[in-house]
Length: 483
Image 1 (cartoon, rainbow, N blue to C red):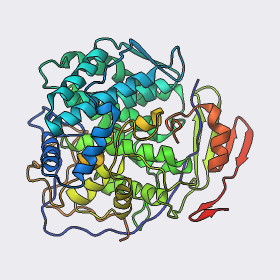
Image 2: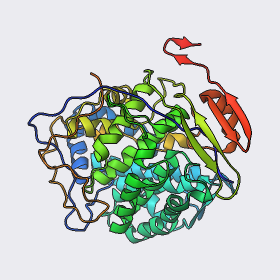
Image 3: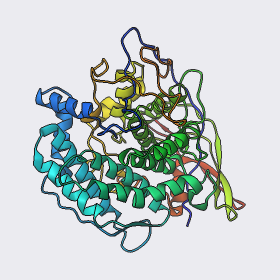
């Protein structure tokens, strides 16, 4: 059954940030020739060395971020994997996807802890978990949620594996086969035909999980064509997760609407985190998606940060078509940004804030405020027991905090090596575009049709579906109370 809930969103504004002076700007990492840099997904060797050095020196906020990691139950060397041959999400018997995401987060956290502390027991644990799964997992099944499982847990599996790819006991080839044969096919299929639905049926986070998985697969498996596929879709894809569909309206003052803000806060935070993940992995291979289309992602992230902090944002009504191709169809219109809980957070902001303000020297005041409020960021297991708390790998305070100047070891921009990756890299020393800003524990990825009434009541949607008009108005929420 197609998963069809939500409403599309509209437009908003923000202030103009300051440009940079004469300080040299960081550029995307450079891979030698056509090869890929390893480690080179969310973390490079320079990143890992920086974390270890800062924690050893007792530097803040790295020490607080590392303490958050070591306190997490998943980051313990005693963790034992429980691999499954088939993982089910959304339907099937049993729905066992929680086993997979818990084990992946344990592998990632142990691997990260090893790189910071040097304790080999944690590397061994990460390797044991990943080898157990690559030796058994053959299929991901379920409802349309199987695409979410493939995308989310695929990019996360690759990131955990990337951190131990040089370990003597790690079955690298087998892990690459799992990425190619289990995770990647579902994500690639989703970007191609969206589960047989009209292209706007699924909200941006569905596409973004798939883009993240495809990109991570290409990098982890050294497949340039697969990387190009992800980059091209990010820029020009037909679905709602491509950057100009996820962020459809850019205002003159620099704030840009995140389309899913007309749905709810949780999914908007998820989408921003996923797009940031895609941008970071691409950057570490010399591809600047962060800066694509005049820093469009920054403008959208600023909008979501301001809105999530309780600020007022403008909104342009947005209508999306939904349903199956050749079958039932309808449309939904969102007329205003949904209400927010300023206390809600996800571990997504440190990575974005540090890229734009530290690497690029741009102003990003709302994103920076959101990052400060969320610090120190935790990871899977710190944000509730359900799958929404495991959608991001997290620990951004430890992993992405940077010095104000660019990293001394940051390499020069990589040469353009393909149509999809060319034309995106900033020139070293160039002034970047001026942008952006004046000085539940329920599963947030679930989008089943059973949620229509509750979501509509909360968000405010005029839905026309198969001739049936449903009207729900959300309570207006303002800081200091509701009316």
